[in-house]
Image 1: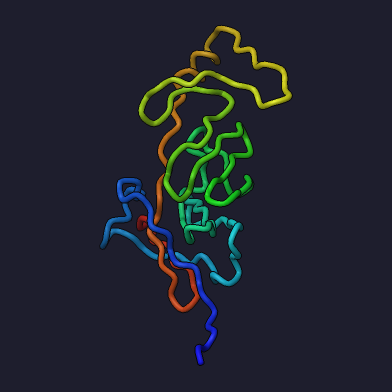
Image 2: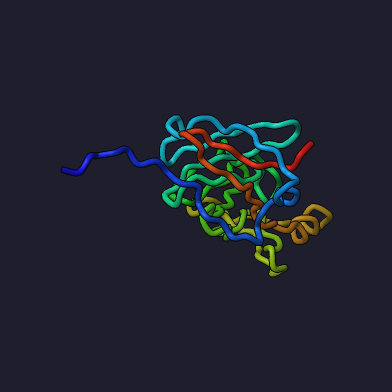
Length: 168
């Protein structure tokens, strides 16, 4: 007879090239992210260490840790919404896939994506079209680049979430 054992989420795989700077082996320290049992699938939490804010999210692909900053204009993603693997920024409606690191939806302000391609401003459905009058602000928006997500390695040890961050 098989014994039912609780299954625990694993640390999600992330694209290696998106590893946060300073977290290579030997150059990091571990911070606690709490107990995995306190982070049900579909939830997020913010962990602060010094001046570093880390978002820990439990996605269908596992638990991930990234900078708790939108890669567009640094709003805290931890107060946004998580839908599956996609986190939505509360500021300009950008959406980012935590499982792949890809931009799902550019922010409403438009600008450059990580590869340097330009995306125009846009308005959500049901809202008036966004007017972008010429001037310095419009020029700044055109040159604002959406950066790539930066992931922190993590592991789950005896139910505890441990995140490697650069040593301070």
